[in-house]
Image 1 (cartoon, rainbow, N blue to C red):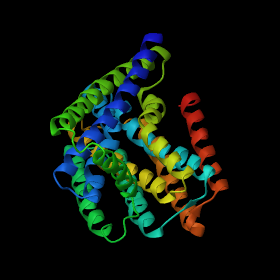
Image 2 (image 1 turned 120 degrees about the horizontal axis):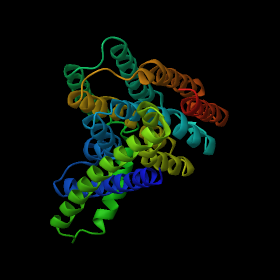
Image 3 (image 1 turned 90 degrees about the vertical axis):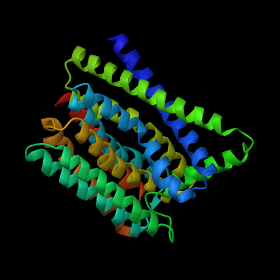
Image 4 (image 1 turned 60 degrees about the vertical axis):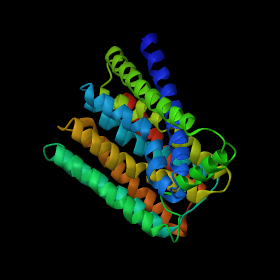
Length: 324
């Protein structure tokens, strides 16, 4: 068991480091190519921050472990909506811009309902997965046009991250392009290796302790792959940048459902495990509705509402680990 846990932890670390290197290298190359910060944020950084979840789910799907793949997607969104936003709101009550909330939060809720419906009616197909990816592309185009005038939605955190990367790039203008390309390549290699080790350790651990792969995906894998979003949102809340924290969560939820869910479906179509279809997805729908209600009332998420979100996450975590 210790070897499985060790491989799991190494996979987490390598995956997160690889995602960071991928974002840094890609942003620097894109900036050299003259791409705008907003476009980089919506595409490269948005993709890069979802890389841990993407690689973990794809590797799990390829390894014949759909429970880990879909558990990771649904569990990551539960962690985003309940754990991360709850913790961020407890640190500092979160002001909420209603326009991006309904646009981005509404899309995430709608696609969660669609995924639940699909899970209850025969499972997910390649065509549905391709449709998810097409919806994501349409969303990115719409969001890019909308946020040219008011960049406060789901891409806000990505543009904030890009701004930090731009400052770093300006300090290294003399750095050769090939070095940035090596950073990018190194990041890709690390996330692939980390994803494989993570899934391998998770499958071994689930087998040893008698826990289903779906529950492992909903809990351990989901929390681990959500660490980058957790750190970003908590730091943003601490610094008073509530729009950045909210944008981080909403953007991540959309990428998880449409990009990672779409790619997973294309690679490994089939039924979604019962634990996900009958427990994880209904809970995520309820959590998404609760989040929208909290955010819309008073245009903020207060500390006590943040505590409710945290309590809900801890409750489902205990239920998953004990009862499912």
